[in-house]
Length: 315
Ligand code: BDR
Ligand code: CA
Image (cartoon, rainbow, N blue to C red):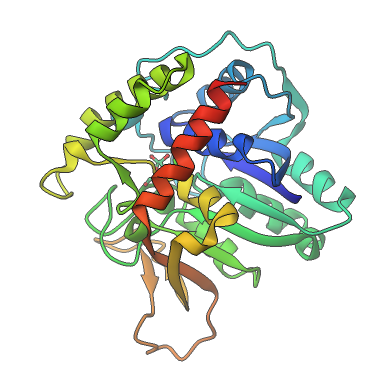
């Protein structure tokens, strides 16, 4: 089994990432950590507990940092709803928040592991950066960081910056410079990992109440995402499930294509703060630090995701 830690800010697509992760028998999920991002830290923690209670997963959930390293938190309630999970209520949490902080829980989980662990991060990377800054001794225990965030071309929070990178660029910079293997599922690939409304309709009729709720939540997301002006003309028919890619890459890497590049992030920038700058022409001559995914086999991805919804729905 592959040992993993899931660091997230649920978030509609973060819950879909959790769905795929908990559906896959080859993953050994040691810890879930939450952070501020799509909504406040209180809300992301509540949402993780509520969703995991609903899908009956008894896993440690540790609360992370309340705000980005230097910037003021900007949330995405206009996309994910005021509570962070659209208009769907999952369950009154019976799972409790861990007494350990996210950083301590990550540190202790990593040091206690016999084999290196993969960290899946689908938020602004604040917790992972704080971990590496405070406890660099954990590095040999991290096999890879699979992060949803950034983009080689174009943004969604601004014209050039993707949301997670925009929220905490200093954290992203710290992680990019860590020397650890990093796989970046940015907008280049996640915009290709979309689900159409017809496909979502098919999912909602797949026979479980979980699938119905997922489809309801995703329809909320379709509408809000379509209000974002930067995207493809038929955006409202393309529901992006960004965060799912970070787990899908672990269990089905053959669905993805990408390349190794030197990547940096713009920390200030008059127009471009939070943009990830991918040196795809090799101008800097600097060593590659990030594997940047750019293409996905959409049919295969959807099959993987729908099977996960089915598996969790039938549990
Ligand atoms: C990312 O931003 C968040 O709103 C999503 O959860 C995802 O992690 C997409 O840009
Ligand atoms: Ca997220």
